[in-house]
Image (cartoon, rainbow, N blue to C red; front, top):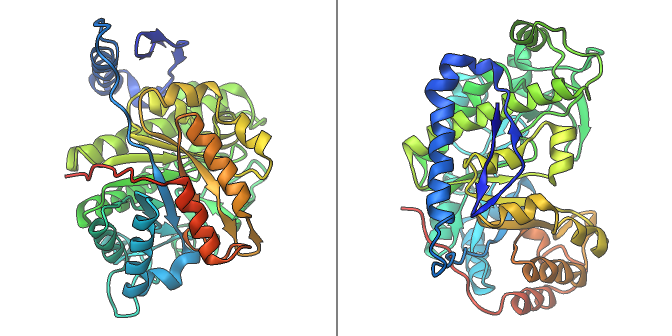
Length: 412
């Protein structure tokens, strides 16, 4: 089945779609009408033949992630108030507070309790709900607050989730269940397992329902390293749907495509559920650049954009070299994406053991903005509290980058 998506009046290359698992009946009843409607609406809106019509300017993303590294800030209401006030003064407009990390939630969760995961660090110093406080304080300053599912399908092997539900984990061909990531040695929940999908979906719907959030964000861990997928459940499913045994080579194109399509099908269903509950919330994705995301992480985010399930994209480009950084900004998938949704670049502002000089941050922000791209920084406390320069100097540097406000419209 060949689909031709349109961006404005310009056709892009046909995309092969092989959601075998959905079955023909489900495919014709749900997915095909959905794709047709989205393609039709896109052509009507973006491809009007009237040459006098101009595309509406898109809101520039100026965001920052609030991570576990920022927990000392997050747990104190006064510090959160100061942080939001400071970000507003420096003309930021979006915060992404972490809500799912290391197999635990950062808020009181009935879903987590039902899964025998004890609540983890969700209370502030005053016994308050951290996520509710961040969202409220952000809104008071005119900032959007988009909770962030940082770990996606990734979880430490020693987490209560992994130990309570070992059948939810997938594995490599040699039977090992872990890989090395920036977070250390981790296991991976099986994104093809219906109970895993329900668990993640229930957490997402809990956030969308329980909080006045402006959106929900998934990053590069809403994926699966290509070496995984050799658990009994997945190889049996692959055999049932294709009649073939799972290839021994994890890079086999059909095997890569089948698994990537499975994750895409899950994201389509998750998007439908979120929009059914709150149609205007922002469905945000923050992946790696496309070649890496698809080939190594089975994350086909460009098709997610083409299918209309992504409302904003923040592509992570953590590079020290400006040339290497800039080369990722003009890739075809970025040029295509920024024509249809707000698109930004994730920039490394520093780590505790690796501070980033302000000059590097400024050059990368300028390179992004020159190409019509927004920016988001990893992570809050590294913006100025943990940099190599004085706090006042770094704040002045951000003020020079964003001299005027760029407020984003609140989700109602």
